[in-house]
Image 1: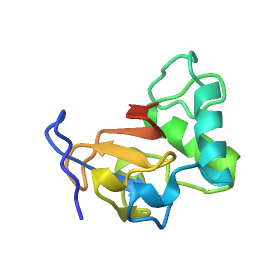
Image 2 (image 1 turned 90 degrees about the vertical axis):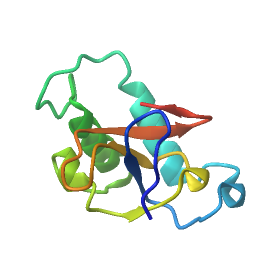
Image 3 (image 1 turned 60 degrees about the vertical axis):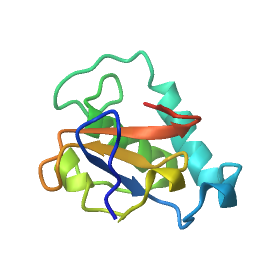
Length: 121
Protein backbone atom coordinates (compact mmCIF):
# COMPACT_ATOMS: atom_id res chain seq x y z
CA UNK A 1 0.00 0.00 0.00
CA UNK A 2 1.32 3.44 -0.89
CA UNK A 3 1.38 5.98 1.92
CA UNK A 4 0.69 9.58 1.00
CA UNK A 5 2.93 12.01 2.89
CA UNK A 6 0.96 15.12 3.74
CA UNK A 7 3.98 17.44 3.63
CA UNK A 8 5.15 16.24 0.20
CA UNK A 9 3.39 15.56 -3.08
CA UNK A 10 3.53 11.80 -2.64
CA UNK A 11 5.68 9.11 -1.18
CA UNK A 12 5.90 5.62 0.14
CA UNK A 13 7.84 3.79 2.78
CA UNK A 14 10.17 0.81 2.79
CA UNK A 15 10.28 -1.17 6.00
CA UNK A 16 12.49 -3.92 7.33
CA UNK A 17 10.03 -4.76 10.08
CA UNK A 18 7.13 -7.16 10.12
CA UNK A 19 4.92 -5.06 12.41
CA UNK A 20 1.74 -3.57 11.01
CA UNK A 21 1.06 -1.44 14.07
CA UNK A 22 3.61 0.82 15.73
CA UNK A 23 2.12 -0.02 19.14
CA UNK A 24 3.45 -3.55 18.69
CA UNK A 25 7.02 -2.25 18.72
CA UNK A 26 7.29 0.41 21.41
CA UNK A 27 11.04 -0.16 21.71
CA UNK A 28 13.56 -0.59 18.92
CA UNK A 29 14.94 -4.04 18.31
CA UNK A 30 18.71 -4.43 17.95
CA UNK A 31 18.67 -4.09 14.13
CA UNK A 32 16.58 -0.92 14.27
CA UNK A 33 18.85 0.55 16.95
CA UNK A 34 21.95 -0.31 14.91
CA UNK A 35 20.54 1.44 11.81
CA UNK A 36 19.45 4.53 13.76
CA UNK A 37 22.71 4.80 15.71
CA UNK A 38 24.94 4.45 12.64
CA UNK A 39 22.82 6.97 10.73
CA UNK A 40 23.18 9.47 13.60
CA UNK A 41 26.95 8.97 13.56
CA UNK A 42 27.00 10.25 9.96
CA UNK A 43 25.37 13.58 10.83
CA UNK A 44 27.59 16.53 9.92
CA UNK A 45 29.38 14.75 7.09
CA UNK A 46 29.19 16.63 3.80
CA UNK A 47 26.73 15.92 1.00
CA UNK A 48 28.33 14.97 -2.31
CA UNK A 49 26.31 13.74 -5.28
CA UNK A 50 27.20 10.10 -5.96
CA UNK A 51 29.12 9.69 -2.69
CA UNK A 52 28.74 6.43 -0.78
CA UNK A 53 30.82 7.22 2.31
CA UNK A 54 32.46 6.99 4.65
CA UNK A 55 33.48 10.68 4.54
CA UNK A 56 30.59 12.08 2.46
CA UNK A 57 27.26 10.82 1.14
CA UNK A 58 24.34 11.47 -1.11
CA UNK A 59 20.95 10.32 0.19
CA UNK A 60 20.94 6.82 -1.30
CA UNK A 61 24.64 6.41 -0.59
CA UNK A 62 23.88 7.06 3.08
CA UNK A 63 21.07 4.53 3.24
CA UNK A 64 23.14 1.94 1.38
CA UNK A 65 26.14 2.51 3.69
CA UNK A 66 24.12 2.47 6.92
CA UNK A 67 22.18 -0.70 6.12
CA UNK A 68 25.30 -2.56 4.92
CA UNK A 69 27.43 -1.62 7.92
CA UNK A 70 24.75 -1.69 10.63
CA UNK A 71 22.86 -4.87 9.74
CA UNK A 72 24.53 -6.45 6.70
CA UNK A 73 21.68 -5.59 4.30
CA UNK A 74 22.96 -4.77 0.82
CA UNK A 75 20.61 -2.19 -0.68
CA UNK A 76 20.89 -1.23 -4.35
CA UNK A 77 22.91 1.92 -5.05
CA UNK A 78 20.33 4.50 -6.17
CA UNK A 79 17.01 5.64 -4.72
CA UNK A 80 14.74 4.34 -7.48
CA UNK A 81 16.38 0.90 -7.14
CA UNK A 82 16.15 0.93 -3.34
CA UNK A 83 12.40 1.53 -3.54
CA UNK A 84 11.96 -1.96 -5.06
CA UNK A 85 13.27 -3.71 -1.94
CA UNK A 86 11.08 -4.41 1.08
CA UNK A 87 7.38 -3.73 1.48
CA UNK A 88 5.14 -0.69 1.61
CA UNK A 89 3.66 0.33 4.96
CA UNK A 90 1.30 3.07 6.07
CA UNK A 91 2.59 6.06 8.00
CA UNK A 92 0.90 4.86 11.19
CA UNK A 93 3.00 1.67 11.01
CA UNK A 94 6.30 3.53 10.55
CA UNK A 95 9.13 2.28 12.78
CA UNK A 96 12.71 3.45 13.35
CA UNK A 97 14.95 2.17 10.58
CA UNK A 98 12.26 2.36 7.89
CA UNK A 99 13.09 4.21 4.68
CA UNK A 100 11.03 7.15 3.41
CA UNK A 101 10.94 7.83 -0.34
CA UNK A 102 10.01 11.01 -2.24
CA UNK A 103 8.65 11.03 -5.78
CA UNK A 104 6.54 8.62 -7.74
CA UNK A 105 7.13 4.89 -7.96
CA UNK A 106 9.86 4.10 -10.45
CA UNK A 107 11.28 7.61 -10.38
CA UNK A 108 11.91 8.47 -6.74
CA UNK A 109 14.46 11.21 -6.19
CA UNK A 110 15.12 11.18 -2.42
CA UNK A 111 15.31 8.72 0.46
CA UNK A 112 15.73 9.16 4.22
CA UNK A 113 15.91 6.92 7.28
CA UNK A 114 13.13 7.30 9.85
CA UNK A 115 14.69 7.48 13.33
CA UNK A 116 11.55 7.76 15.46
CA UNK A 117 9.51 10.52 17.09
CA UNK A 118 8.68 12.06 13.70
CA UNK A 119 12.36 12.56 12.80
CA UNK A 120 14.43 11.36 9.86
CA UNK A 121 18.00 11.50 8.59
